[in-house]
Length: 115
Length: 109
Figure 1 (tube, rainbow over the protein chains, first blue to last red):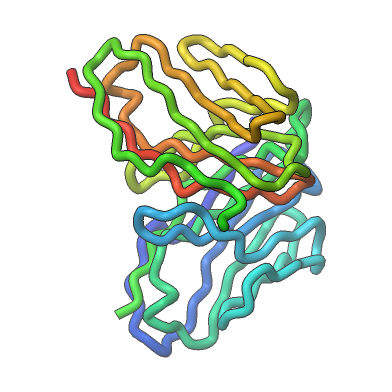
Figure 2: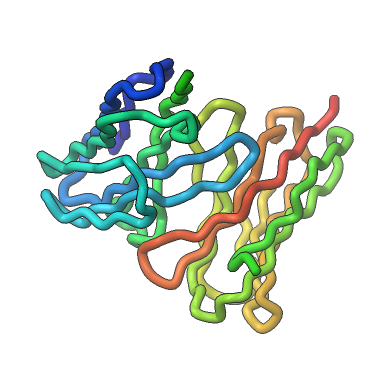
């Protein structure tokens, strides 16, 4: 079966510090991968999506970046965090066998607080 | 105008009630419709996926899509306290999803 992992689960970082969040998917190959941010009480905002290694599209201009160094690994980074970067970061994947590529499956999330 | 509008709630119902959750949308290109359930401080979990007008049933859950009215609903029968969560509608015209902002549901024992 396929599983998706994210770490860390919780992170508190000072303004101006760097960020690295990691997401990995097990049990599948060549998934589409997505990074979302969810502000408190709000819907999900798509940040980046990737259809393959080193193929990444950015949806929202900001101080975040994403990389996909391996087929099932997706990394969200920042060189200098802003207060506005606080939120719940979710990684998702699609392409499960027997499912449409429209069906996205989410990881457990990382709660980031920037102080 | 947002592409997807969802009744914000919060919604509080007694155990055993029938719950109706709704979303409207403006983009007629949307063809795929999903409902996610999100427990507090957890990632969303895919509940239902439909791609045509009509009803789809899965246990106590029924998803309804009316493309002519650009309206989708999720019905929960015999609601349980374990159904207490935020429900997000999502829709797509390709591989990217557009989400509603979610409806917070509380089912009281």
